[in-house]
Length: 483
Ligand SMILES: *[C@@H]1O[C@H](CO)[C@@H](O)[C@H](O)[C@H]1NC(C)=O
Ligand SMILES: *[C@@H]1O[C@H](CO)[C@@H](O)[C@H](O)[C@H]1NC(C)=O
Ligand SMILES: *[C@@H]1O[C@H](CO)[C@@H](O)[C@H](O)[C@H]1NC(C)=O
Image 1 (tube, rainbow, N blue to C red):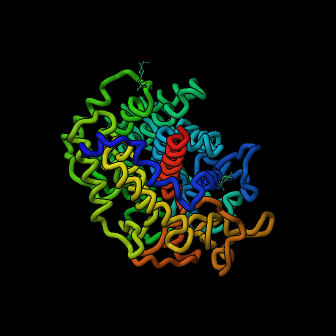
Image 2 (spheres, rainbow, N blue to C red; image 1 turned 135 degrees about the vertical axis):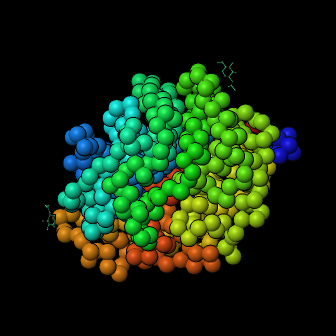
Image 3 (cartoon, rainbow, N blue to C red; image 1 turned 45 degrees about the horizontal axis):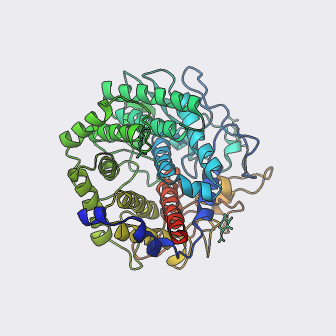
């Protein structure tokens, strides 16, 4: 670590990424199109997805509150607040860290719009200080349907947390997301930025004062979660197994980070957040090396955020332990992909790539971690012999497990026939990163094989942020060469 600190960061850049075979700017553009295709609610006139229209315009809270908008979680049509918030935090983190990459790619405008689409929805869901909707749509009912979101007509109940049914993990995650959105919009839309921050602070207080796990609070959902494991295609089913306390402290740290660290202007001057984050880090022993970085396993992110914020040896060493383990000892496929889980294989690898790019930016083993991140991402873009990003590169996935894109153009009917149709999806779901290969680099491009071909909001988030990080390094390297 200390060697890393004294290394000149720029000197290591050129060798690592300058010569990549892949157009990272183009990948950013595509990934943002994937998010656009996942939009629920009334679409703006500048919608770029020709096969998408307005949908789920009847989404309402228990007292008739407007809950339209937000994103569909995956290839189905439930709106899960938890993964949406986690996705938003990670996209915002990547944007704040690597804005130059988005700007150089001409994608800053689309990134802002993707982030705001989620922020607007969270604000709608936060109907009073201690009341937050965390899910719209009934999972079982939703899964009786295969077709277009524009044709949804089943009832879509909404589930919330409140003081009687608290959910610190969900409230905290949403607080972190809104704080991150607030920072993203500091310059471009100060009014919106303060509004997001105000909601973030209220949600943070709600999470702290009323403790509980949201999947216990949202009873309507819990009855499905508690049924025998539905080996469902939706990676967004989150029976979150994270300990309530850890989860809460993780969220606090994230909130703090976005308030204080991503830019030189704090969103709030209240030092309470860092104190509490450090307190929880000790209390809940977050020092232990995690195995992964995932929407429901955030400790690795906490460690690196605290390292960046404080530069304290404890956090720096924890971040280094995680990345060294990941690079040197984590299980890998024969072709070198980090293999953590069969669900979201590529997402897991992209997430650790992003976290270790962040560690590199903090001066920890920069060359080693950047080379690792490039290798993981380039595996997904083609080094493995194929692309795993729909619409990009060589032999990309043709049958993502995604109902809307499996349908012909409207007004042709669409239903389970489309699910069973043994040919490529009629609509190109540009930019979607599929779940990925198994531990032997084996992959099946079949719609029903969701273990390989699932697509979700959170699968793309760390990936997009890591790609932005690699593009950022290229820009720095080019700049360095010129001067
Ligand atoms: C990379 O992709 C961007 C966006 O699609 C495009 O404008 C640019 O020309 C591409 N660059 C190269 C070198 O092909
Ligand atoms: C929903 O659509 C299906 C198929 O078009 C139809 O059979 C059903 O009656 C509709 N249900 C409602 C509640 O409108
Ligand atoms: C942060 O802001 C302060 C006051 O505006 C300024 O003096 C300082 O140089 C800035 N630090 C960095 C790292 O940009």
